[in-house]
Image (cartoon, protein in one colour):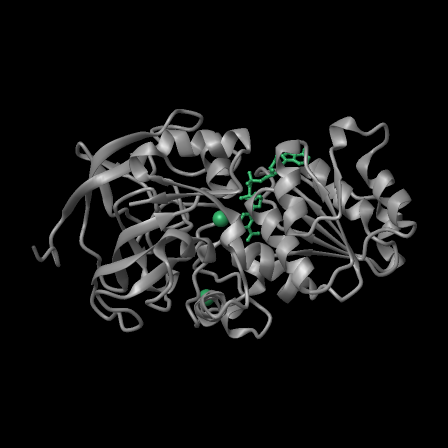
Length: 375
Ligand SMILES: NC(=O)c1ccc[n+]([C@@H]2O[C@H](COP(=O)([O-])OP(=O)(O)OC[C@H]3O[C@@H](n4cnc5c(N)ncnc54)[C@H](O)[C@@H]3O)[C@@H](O)[C@H]2O)c1
Ligand SMILES: [Zn+2]
Ligand SMILES: [Zn+2]
C-alpha cells in the first residue's frame, strides 16, 4: 500500500514524562513537510544521550519519542528534498549539516546552527512535531526520534549510506562510531606509541578505545565503575582497567603514577563533572590533550585549577568526532564494508523493538556495550 502523503499509524515508544517508564503505544506519524524525510526504521541503538533525556539531565519537551542513533529506509520525502529518495538506506543524525550556517561553512566546524542538542526543543525546524498519540502532540528528541517504526526528520539530519550496509549494525554509525572512533582518529589524532586514558567504557568509550588502538596507541587505560565492562574493553585494546571506587587515591593520581608524566590523550565519555575534571588532571601538564565527549547535566560548571591552565595542555569538546556528518559518515560506513573498521564487537546485543524494556535493562545494568533494537 502506498503511504506517500498519508498519516501512518504505527508503534512507538513514548516517554510521557522524565524518569518514567517508556510505553509502546500506537502513534500517528504525519507525512513529511517540505525539506523533511519520513523513514521506516530498521534499527536503533540506545545511547547515553538518550538516557540523559529520560533522566532529565538534558531538558526536553515531554511527552517525547526517544532515540537518535537510527538506520532505516526512506518511505517518502517532502517538497524540495533532493539528497535522498524513497528506498534509500539512511542514517538519522543528532547534529545536522545544513551546509549554510557559520559552523557548516567553516572548515573546522561541525556543530550546525540548526542542531537541536543544546538546549533541546524537541520540535522540527518549523516549531512543531510530526507525532501524536491519542490526539496529543508527542515531541521529537534531537529532531530525530528513532524508538519508533516510522519517524520524520529534516533532510539536513539524514544521510544516505551504502545499500549493502547491514541494517542490524549500521545504526551505530549514526552516533556511537563517529563520536568515539572519530574522537580518537579525527579529533585527537592519537599518535602511534602514545598513552591514552578513556573515562567510561560504554558504547562511546569502547569506540574511543577502538580508535586509539587503530591509531597505534601503546597503552590504553580504561576507567569505569562497572567492572563488567572490563573484559570486553580489554578485548578491544585496553591495557589497564581502573575502577575509581576501588582505588585508595583519586584516579588521576593513579594515572599519573602509572604513566610517570600523565596521559598524552584523555577522553571523557560519561557526562559527569567529576570525571571531566579527572580526565583533565590525568593529562600530561605540558602537551596532554583532554577531549570531552560526555554531555554534562544542564546548568553545571567545570571547576578547573586556573594556574594549571597555562602549562600547555589542551581541553577540547567534541561532538560526533568533529565530522561534518553528511559529508563524512557515508565513507565510514564504506570503510566498515571494506573491513577497514570493525564495529561488530560494539554490538553485543540485538533485540526486537517489542523487547525494548529488556534492551533498556541491558543498557542500565551495563551488560551491553550497545544493544540494537530491530524493527
Ligand atoms: N559528544 C558527542 O558527540 C556525544 C555523542 C554520543 C554520546 N555522548 C555522550 O557520551 C557519554 C557516554 O555515552 P555512552 O552511550 O557511551 O553511555 P553509556 O551509558 O553506554 O556509558 C557510560 C559509561 O560510564 C560509566 N560510568 C558512569 N559513571 C561513572 C563514573 N563516575 N566513573 C567511571 N565510569 C562511570 C558507566 O558504567 C558506563 O560504562 C554520554 O554523556 C553521552 O551523552 C556524546
Ligand atoms: Zn548518541
Ligand atoms: Zn549548519
